[in-house]
Length: 177
Image (cartoon, rainbow, N blue to C red):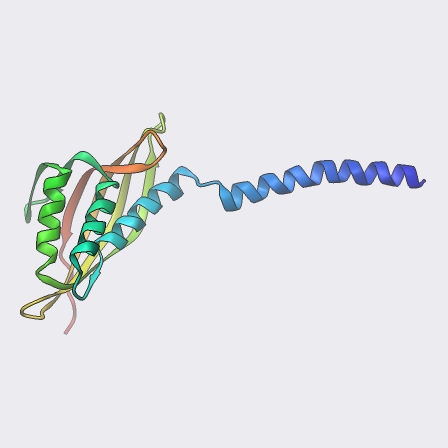
């Protein structure tokens, strides 16, 4: 009887341990394509954020970090309210970093993200709501802008997702006084 129990225990362990390892890998170590895309947007939001004065070294770090998240050329459309076109990433980031210098604070919030990955797994389209808020440096005026956005991402060789096109449609919000 002991020999049978030992064989059953060994067989159970042989089945259970690989299954447990596979479940652990899938839920804790494996990053799905959706999670990788969400990570790209989360990283961009952190690099865009500003709270107080940024030192030149920090600005350079943000620049390099954003550079890794954007394709060499990116198409930006801002609806009828903001200019758009195709930009070299370096040019777009220089304009962004220069403009951010006039702000005391800047933050973005991304909500209601919907991700559609192409059948080939090499591109994705993402729809989301964007909130941009902050405070100007001189007038100390606060602002809060809302956008409905669509973005196109492509998958780089290492599996990273990078932005290749962004469309920002301003949303008019009415607030009750």
